[in-house]
Length: 385
Image 1 (cartoon, rainbow, N blue to C red):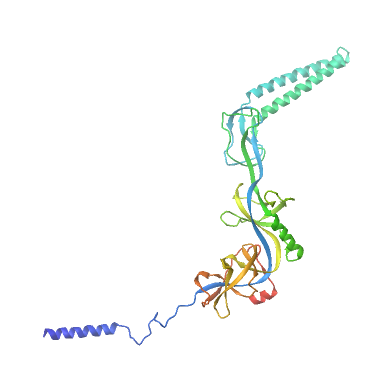
Image 2: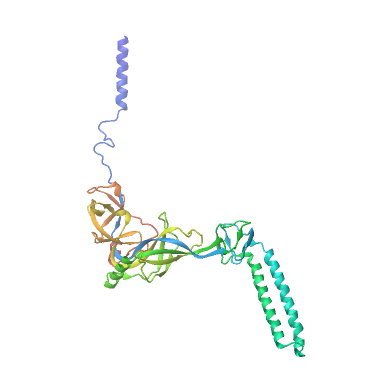
């Protein structure tokens, strides 16, 4: 009896398991018959057009105007009248020096002027009646002028005990403290004021590179760039929001460096740029026609040279060796290897190998195109359309 019950229970369990198991007739997802989809890459159509060649050169920021605040008279500093690191206006008093000695000298000089003036006034009617000679009267007038000059000098000393700001700008730290003796034997440096809006960028261009560009322009290979606007690249690689302009270039090559000194100017309304900072300056040097530009991220470098990945009409990935020339903004100018019209992989290179099949989507470039971005000709515009 017990054996019969056990046998019946086993049959029921087997039937339930058979009902719950999937049917072998239905295809199973992810089985050997299902394949992985091809990887997706972002591509751009290589275009031929006109591009502005640029150069990235190191530079250093310098204040537009700098003024050293110095003591003009000798004395003890009584008070500092500014907050370090703030903006000051031209003419504002920055330091006050003990003026008691100079004030006493001015009072004495003022008394000498009054005495000399009285002598001249007393001699004037006496000269008319010949009671004094003309020489005595002239000597009294000369004495009056001498005392007036001495008074002006002492009043200037009193004025100089209040040290003013010679320009408007941002003042740095104070180089002396209250109680310090200044002005003895030299005009003591008290503080420095700098105007940093606008601000200068001093940089150099190699003389050999300048000659090479001039030769290319003279031969007709390149055209001279008419733009004087330049771009500033900060130490972290980011681009400064406001464009600048080139002010001048030196007329001679520095024999110690073989470079030509240049200067550019940038607006600095938010005081983001500070004197002494190291930056890179990107400026237009020439214009090239029939140029092919590719983003830097699309170019791979190896001991064998530079190359890019393109997508063939069959949707396959193929390597293409290239040679790059100059720079146009943040892009490479391709000298050899591309003819225009190729589908160039820009993003997704790490996911593909030569010969692999890929799915292409258009590459969305940055909204702010670099200054050297190419301008496709009419034929390329038709291809893009």
